[in-house]
Length: 249
Image (cartoon, rainbow, N blue to C red):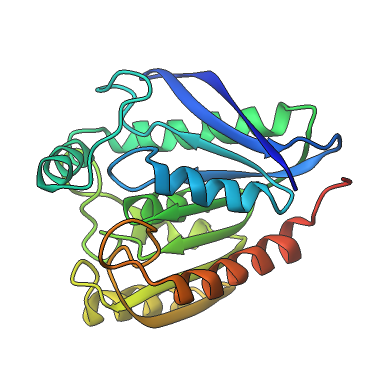
């Protein structure tokens, strides 16, 4: 499907938040997806992922996660300086602010005249963790997380003491958890800790581990694996089609 892009400014308790919206041009109603980026904000690779999802019949909303600290539209380079800045802000931002951002995006999607009201979440890296937290919301029916960092350590947000593991029991929708075995940010013991948690809570989930490094989905840089990316995007779309439907295009 042909897509179009727009921007909205959403109100949060922590200030205005610019949010990128990609949606089908064709008239009709479509499910909504909140899509959380890596620590580098809404970069070219993130936007291209959003375009791929939107082109299959979804309204994809990408909040600028560091809106309290950055000018609208600011992105960080995929280099050491960009990584340092993104990681520093990751543990400067209040955990409650991350959650308020999620609720603001979901509420915006639900009230849009072109949205069916069916909601999902998607995230990559830090965004995978944020998508996992978005699944705590009762109206999120499907969530896909790519190599979600810090869940096993509980270190997201200011103070580095998040409650994601404690709150996982609130998840009612279906999860798709995707990991790279060669990802040093989420080692084997970290992955097993998360998987054991999901089993103990008897959550509905699919678990995929592949031979890939951190950021193997990013179509920029030496770690990109196009074959894995193509296969796993298919798994994400299957989840969203099953759980959210495809709208009335």
